[in-house]
Image 1 (cartoon, rainbow, N blue to C red):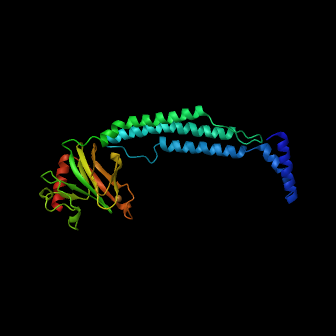
Image 2: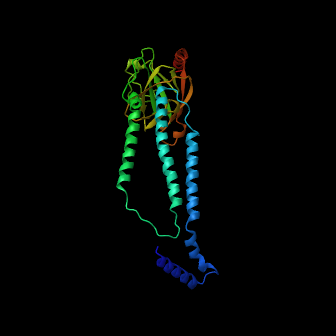
Image 3: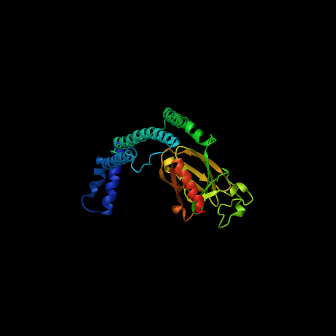
Length: 301
Ligand SMILES: [Cu+2]
């Protein structure tokens, strides 16, 4: 605003104020604001940004409300990738927010003329390239773990378990002594044959259906995920494993749990009113314990 422009503005403002006949002393109001500028607002906004950045960093670096420790190789890989991503995006976040706070304070309104910018091609190219390099680089760094999980199947000796999600519980099916799971025929689903194991397939006669997922420690497990009604999602935090179970599909995932214990399988797809209670125990145990568990499950059927 030029000197004469500011003068005109002041005159106009004060005449408007006097016309309205407002309280005594207010005629000097607009002038005082112009002198002081927006120092208070700019300072508060900059401070708020800095506090907000500090709190965000505290929650991420201090690992407040974080994941439990992983119990498999894939989980550790995924955590490393997670950390890499957080360090890079965290530095960008920190620098850009602090720069924003500084710009808000440094270029606050102070009664002067407003500046205008046209844009800067060099800057555009620099940050677009930086973002591209960052995303492609992170993708390449994760390529090995991704391929390990999605492109390589389970090895020969893996324990095969079928997992079925339905509103609102999980069911697990183990092969009996014949080591073969019987065929599934949805038309044969009844109250006593909840999974619809085909009566005509003899390999299904000795199958064992359970309500918990028990697996031997340090042995590869191959899961085949199915869904009977809507899409559900198989999620075990400690395995860092999350995979949708989709009606009409048989999706395979595999893992090796390296630590015995009891973990939680939670459905991670909002699948209906009872979604919140769609959970099951994942029991990682020694091979002898697992064998005994399976015998006991069979006896209970
Ligand atoms: Cu569900």
